[in-house]
Image (tube, rainbow, N blue to C red; front, side, top):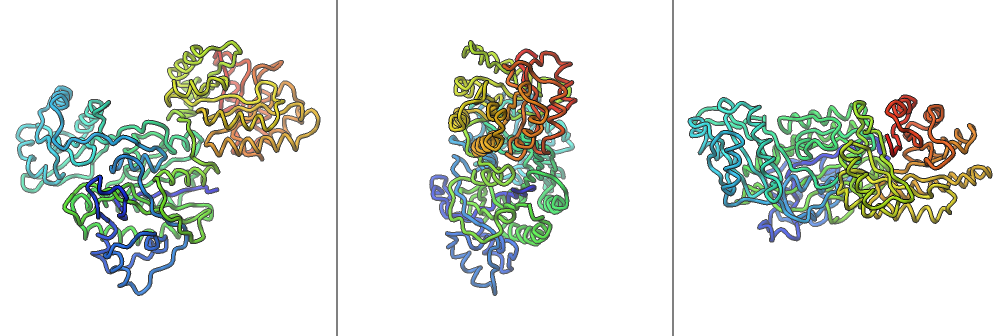
Length: 609
């Protein structure tokens, strides 16, 4: 497993060949070929990553470039051609798919400008009039409308072939904070069927004839419709560090640290700096200038120079990798600067991988889905696959000392619980900011549908006695995950513990942990402390740690006693650093819950707190 993953998106760096390019009006587009047509210089580090070994790079411009090179370094890791599956070619959908979310519907575009009701709502919300309202080049629109904007104070509203609403304003006329507030309001207006992928603030300065866009652009993206790998990694306790506009593209969801940049040069510098930092998780980087400055402006030379700048720095990034690091380079779409169009192009993108688990040259061929990247990242950091049905809420397990309920798996495991009871539990948990709801397995499918990603679904297996066979528990766990559970609470076989058959207990926990993790869920192991001696509790702490479970849990709540502060402290002392403690059973007051947390619990199981 990797400790650090560096995922770099070269925004718009397509490599052509998308099988459905014609349906997007992009047949023949190839951003890589266009860039290489203006360069005779080598790209040694991208070559070492496998860029020129990817299948299907038969564009004459690529072949001509390669023929001019004295040598092309051989790949040192894995490489592939990635084909997008989502119905779109914009940055938001591309990044969502990279992070594991496929979009079967394209986001709306406005080739004839925005409808009157949108303009009326904007004018009412902002108190300012509207200019332009057409698809336009960002530099041309301020040249054509900037002077009138300065005289009238009206906002320059425009779009493109992408799913965007852009608002340009001179910083002397509309202060930057006001422009940001205007875009917040526009984001609220552009919801529902009108939900464009991004609302973009486009500030500029200068005088008529000499207007210039400033680096204080800000994107207000639509939130992903379900959890992404960022949400899962953050909820698991890993670092998710964004560099560039990643924070904007995911609306801040799933991010633990944001590092905005003014462009590629600053983004590359921050990337290089990150290789010297100690963190555990994902560093997700977007280098936007390829798209914003060069692709959209059909500036092939500028694009080429920017690629050389990145290639030069890539050597430093590779040199800064540690043994347990993983480096991934890809793109979110194309933006061929050699075509008449100035918009994004539907292209395949490169997938270049080097580091932990990928140090042998390997041609992965053509892969369907940018979400292959999410699988690689999740498997590398967590040892699990991303293939799953459940959609944990973005805020799951993000705890706040100000809200005790953020630690709570709100529980209803009564034998007389009804479907309506479970729906009421979900509503209460969501409104209280709980970590999850813990419910009977028979209701997981319905709860998954009703919760619609608002809260993580937890269920129990081998409950409450734990003496089911391993095969039965294994089936229960897999079925629960397939039905939508993202957290599994398993009762150990206490009969085997009392019989001294600890090796079989350990094997069962390991098998179920592996199965649950393969589904992308987490495992909490209930040891029922009220039935155990102290030495048995300590031994089970060791077993749970070595089996790779995520939590050890005190009680079912159906035993002779529930959680105690002493047991929580004992478990916390004897588990490994990657295991957390869940205290459950008899916790009914905030005071009691806080005592458990102080003793070392990270989660609380409760039905009446």
